[in-house]
Length: 401
Image 1 (cartoon, rainbow, N blue to C red):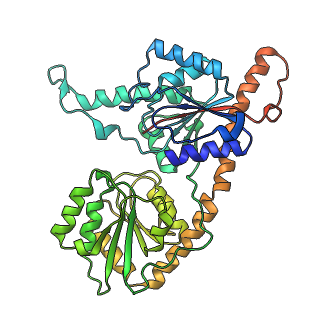
Image 2 (cartoon, rainbow, N blue to C red):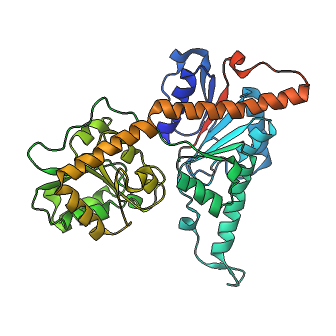
Image 3 (cartoon, rainbow, N blue to C red):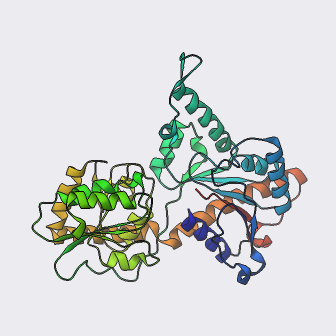
């Protein structure tokens, strides 16, 4: 989410748009004073740490948001959020203020993962159905008010349109961008070892335990190391599991880093074993570095690797299947290299920042133009072109989720 917000703000400012950031949570934007009058950060804290501050459709909150959007006067409101719309009252407020709306959904729907147990009305009505319907109705309202809904993969779009009933005519896909290094990363370890890497949060849904079990059961005669770069709530338990599996001496825990490219320089294979995922920045970075990637067959990951064209898919939670693929790649340098070459080319063609930038600018300009069209209809006169008004003025609202 942080990468996307920073990318969007940089994209818009580089195109001479004026940007007002309605900030909730941590300020990740640094000092924007050097960017002049075209950028402003206003702390609004519409979304609190529990993500509930803006989810209730309460009239005072809606009216407060409407006043904010009327004062800010943007040509388009871009709500940067993940799933189940933490921004709700503010979306209604923006619509009441007459501002065109673009929303994003960047994770798979998770309604069924958080269903409270039990039944209602003396056990006569199952809680699952009521919970799902209530949540979907609240979420679907914001989709109905949006002019455009942006997803980061076709699978994410498909799931929201199928499971939540989102309008298909409003959806579009803008893939994640990734910087392409000037040259491919180095090939792992020069001493002939093969290094498998993971870069990201050490969280339960990433299923790094499956990766540890797969490494422990490798049959290859070559020396294999596992490089784990990141931090998170599962760090202690994963280190303990590595000890129980007898592979502590083969696992290197690197902690967090600001230089991920140096990590990819040390790897030959990058593996992601998530049980749910939409579009992984780690996989994109590994592809851009020219590494062979192995992912689970969930969410948008198969789409990201061209359904096997420039990566390998394995069933989620299956350590044996993962070990078989890793054994094959560990023992075949030519196959690893070929996969990495195709992956890097795909990243360059599909995810280059210049390509993704044009998609976002075109989309936002189109939606912003709808306001100009409405103003023209209301005033019965031709308004100034967007380009004559200093491009557009979007209000970017950020979710900490």
